[in-house]
Image (cartoon, rainbow, N blue to C red):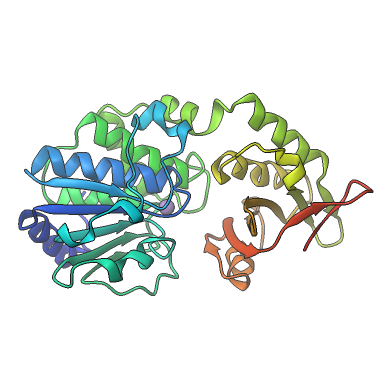
Length: 324
Ligand SMILES: [Mn+2]
């Protein structure tokens, strides 16, 4: 199925790829399956169809758990990138979490493009491919390949489907449209395997992750009147372990399945002085959790959102916790 929207933008992007020598694809901070799937898949797509050098960049590395589906991929840190060489730079997914910081370092003749599905993106670049009706940046890039009438190889199909499955919570969130399922079916036809992707991104959690889930569930507080359930992972809980947000984000979804709960919130430390909050709502809720996330400078979807705030979560003697 051919999309009606983005014809002009896709055309310009196609032209820009053809005329570029050095292309930078940039993923957002603490990249998730969509950030990684979109840049890793798009890199391979460009390499298979054009004779271009493609560099992947990000402020963080590709999370280890994605190696099972995407293989090892080098994400160059901006400190080690030679920005002057790029003639095309494309930010994929949540472009205001990292890509926005590197645009000014690019050569002034470098064409800048963004591919995103977050509704609150205000960044304006040469080519803006932003539409919140898509489940993921990966889904949009699937349509770019359709637009160019080029074949999607098995590797690219796996990468894009990883992004779609990651951002739709395995086709469960409200951002899963029939168009998303059409694209997914096509990617399966090209050789992507749903259960292998789900296994890598959701099911095969490491024991340390499961233990952490246990801690968070144990400490959850239910506010019955408000229909809210809240838990936090303190620095002490982490005990020197480094968990990515990706490994913990399922916890908020599990908390949201408690009967009577309208929304769940999980707070955890991601940096010395930075806390991540994940908010989830069950599908029958009347709450739009993205509104709550936006109050804290975050964003997301009606049923799944997140934000980052400064502070430290510390344990208290009675087993509780507070933010300082
Ligand atoms: Mn995404």
